[in-house]
View 1 (cartoon, rainbow, N blue to C red):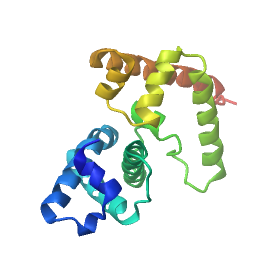
View 2 (view 1 turned 180 degrees about the vertical axis):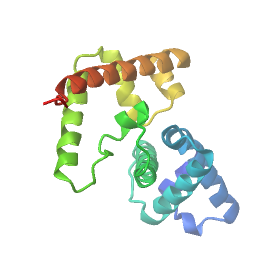
View 3 (view 1 turned 45 degrees about the vertical axis):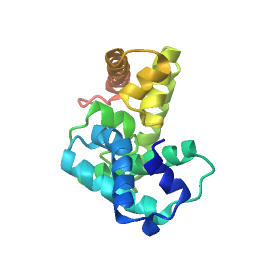
View 4 (view 1 turned 120 degrees about the horizontal axis):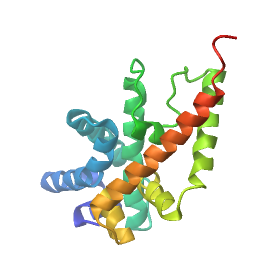
Length: 195
């Protein structure tokens, strides 16, 4: 972890000199930019989300025993802020990006408090979980690293000893395979309109 992020672990951010505060912010920005941008696909929105997430980090940071826990928490806060942003801003957007469908299972076309939405979300979660058990373990690990841990393609490639392009290609194929399985299953379950 960079020495700047180490300051978040050991010091009170608000008591740091201004130039150190700036360095800490940019270290945080560099850490989470890829994760947030990948979800929202908009540079300006990404910057806004990161600023808001950073304020939350500074004001509500729990104590951590080690750098790994802090880093994971920083990514989680940023990822959750991005998901919240998408939920708020996709109310009127009926098109669903494949990546967002996998990342934001809970964001459905139903109102949040509707029974239909809850049931459909639960069914979708169960279907995706069952498909994950049928894919190769290395593909399942790719999905775990990418969406649950929020790692970049480079970080995944380093961990798995692969090149970045191969990681991108395998993730794309895995997402497309799951999407096709979902489309097939859900098309078969649609009620016949002629009845």
